[in-house]
Length: 252
Image 1 (cartoon, rainbow, N blue to C red):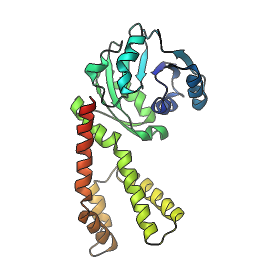
Image 2: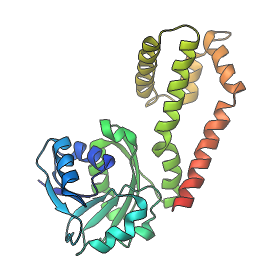
Image 3: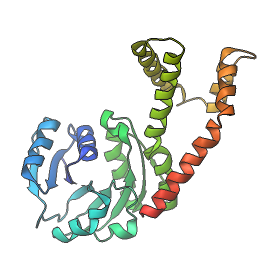
Image 4: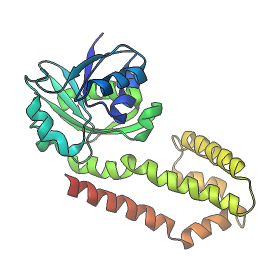
């Protein structure tokens, strides 16, 4: 069984490790042994635990999951040279990640759904490790290899930040039903069912066709859809991706 070493022990590292633990041995490296033990307890499988200072990464497969501003500090604490490093850090460019002691670098961007093995993970970097990257990150969902860092920054604005946009929409729709007189518990249950079914439908149907299939002439959906257009929801969604992309560029 192959070993994957996590540099960092936060929520994203734990989510990815949950997806990998049945097929890989998990090693985790951090600053605090108590937190490493908590990581192991949450993962519910034996984990090899090591402290960061002076840790030898020679020949290892690393997943870097620390705060983006800590890249330089972490790099200085490690020794040796890893086989490959997969980064999950938003805004940390391939050029900046070259400070890490690794022969090859792949930049990845999972999202919050990694915690339920349904992440949409985008990636780019050393193409020699494309297949390994897909194998690793498909343990937590689906993957998409992109041809440039510009594209992964745009994808971060869509898939990485997207759960927050959808959460806003979900909350607003449930609030709308409550406003009209539906009980809160019923509104939340119906909203969750809506999003669960929609997630399956959108895999095979273009959004425009899905919309047209629901919206009959002069019907309830057409009335509600008109209200969304009046509120510039379409333009606001496009603006949200643009602003998040601009922010990703500033972070990098």
